[in-house]
Length: 300
Ligand code: FES
Ligand SMILES: [Fe+2]
Image (cartoon, rainbow, N blue to C red):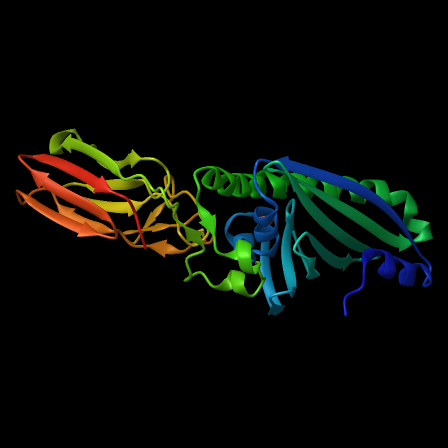
C-alpha cells in the first residue's frame, strides 16, 4: 500500500510538524513516456548528475530505496531517499535531513507533443524552525535547476528521435526502476522508414579523430581514425537513445554518456591494406582506389 503526500503530512502534523510547499515546473517537446522513463531511470544518476551518487538498498519496478550521496559545496551529505511510482504519470519521493522532512511529488502530462512536469516540494519541521523553510526551499529550487539542466536534454533527445519515427519499447509496457538497471537490452526501435546513409571520401581527406557521417541516429555512423586504423561506431545508443557523437573513447569503445555502457566498434578496418570491404549490423565499408565508401543504416 502506498500513501499520498497529503496522508503523510497529516500523520506528521499530528506529531507536531508544520509544512510549507513550493512548486517547480519544466516543459519540453517530448512525451510523458520520456518523463516516466527519466524518473524511473536509476543508472543515469551516477553518470549524468555530477553532484549525486545513488547507492541502492532495495529496488523493484515500482519503488527504490537508496542512499543519495549528495555534494553540497565542499560537503558530502548522505540522504536516505524512498521513491515510488504512484502511476505512469506520477512519482513520489520522501527523505529527511536533520530536523527536516521533505516529500516530493512529481506529476507529468502531455498536450500535443509537449510535456509539462510539476514538482511539488513539501517541507516539514517542528514549528520553531518554520522561519528557515524559506532558505531550505531556495536550496531545493537550486538543486532542481541543476538536475533539470541534465535531465531535460535527455528527454528532448528522445523527443527528437520520436519526431523521426523512432519508438521505445517501454512505452507499451511501462518503465520500471529495477528494469532500468538492465543496460544490456535495446530499448530503442528503429523507424520503419529508416533512411540509409551514403558517404565517401579519399583516405587522405579523412582526418585523425572523429568524423561524423549522416545523422545522429541509426542513419549515421561515427568514424574514428587513429593513424591507418578506422573504427566505425554508431551515433546512437540503442539502449535508451543517447547520442554518441561526443562520447569519450575508452579502451577502443565509446562510453555512452547516459549510463556509461561501453559500445564496441561496428567495424574496424585498416586503411593501409588496399581494396577491401566489410559489412556488419547494416553498415558497409568499402575501400576502392584509395576512396572510403560508407553506406547503410545501423541495425541491431
Ligand atoms: S542510453 Fe543507456 S547506455 Fe546508452
Ligand atoms: Fe536525472
